[in-house]
Image (cartoon, rainbow, N blue to C red; front, side):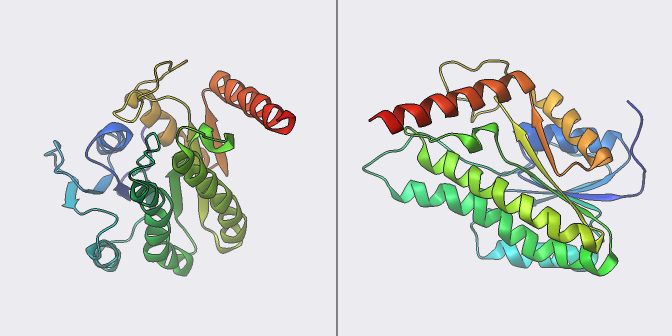
Length: 234
């Protein structure tokens, strides 16, 4: 794999495990300076990597972002943080947590990072949504709905910021081999390393939206149509 342009700086949110961790490792190998933020310590201890422990729901999160942006020009920001799970009707507060992390955490990141990109007329904001954004999630409504909100917002933001020289990419993966992949059936699941490679490809090509794998995308689309028909027939 050819290297991306060196001496650039990336900010990865959700960097201590899963896709975020694999992405940090890959970017460092590609010569990038990487700042990572996660609610957990990172296993990485490498030159070119700076890690910050902070939860995106914390009051300190916007302050940390502001400090990083003031000290460092961020060329690319990738929002990898995300939570999700089945609905528990005895703990509906967890539904709010899902939106706080998936959607509001992303918006806080955009608020802190994107204005400097606009000023520089350059930069790239990326976020990991999900192919599940088209589903009505009876068993996990907050997850699918929050991902739908992310995807819809990112499309609009991308069209708006294009005029400012700032790229926005919404990445929609299917099943990735992370701690969030809890479904009993996980067709066409990919590794975190493979997902990270796809993210890096998007850093080069800067598409408005990238969906992968295509086979999973078709299955999810078909399931969404079947679900909508079933709801209409009730």
